[in-house]
Length: 355
Image (cartoon, rainbow, N blue to C red):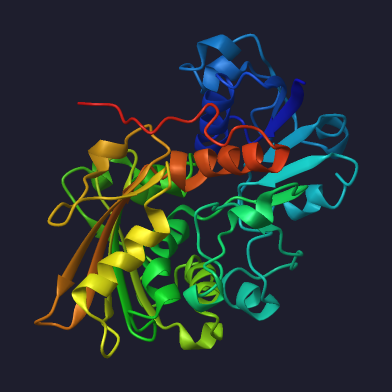
């Protein structure tokens, strides 16, 4: 069976990456691409690298145009998807790359986003542990099988959650004192022109933003780690500091947490090995190794380096992802494959691009 697909926000970075990956998917046909201010223009004017899709023209983003497809991807700014998802009830599968359907808590939404709250959908991070080890270490993949509505993750949020969920689920780290600092590429902020993202502003500089617990991905991380631990989200305390660095793509997240009393070095490493030892796209590196963002460029891969700092009594986890692939579009398509019963790895590569 070939599934018909529409992609909204197709002129942006996330929409363009969804299209790039779908273009090589044998089970889908990209029929419709939509935008707002760029409607009426050729897709190739905004995504010139997508040569196989150069025949497509951007249409208006309306429920009428998006309806009538088997699958709709929404790659819209936060707070914009809900107005469409409510009107797409007849579409068999809708995948939202925005934040509108990620959070389960209305109060968390009000605190970090504001505006109308929409029902939470199945979270699009298949490898994420969503039960403590004592309950069988269930992964989010099980909640994606047969799903009709999927919320693709925030790139920073899924990176940190995948980094720490194994330790939280196994009880070998204390989630009440998490510190994470992320080096991120500006493509994660979207394609709209913003002064602080201009080349002249970021080249040769590192620029912290959303400092002091204000970043919108914080409640998403707390929600994910609370599920992994079986605890209340209020028990997950995290200091989260992102820093824009001059690379177009990529996230390098360095996350630390206290070692739980009595946890041995062997138990700590075994928690991550048990979680990801059989995974294709999330890989724990050998002891003593740490990843680089260059190693995951263009890949749907998260590479994790784990160190145990006994002097500070903390576990240190360094994780690298491509924010547009594993962080967004790749996670969405991987989740789509699972929902439809297709081979999970279809159209997704574990291999990066070098140099």
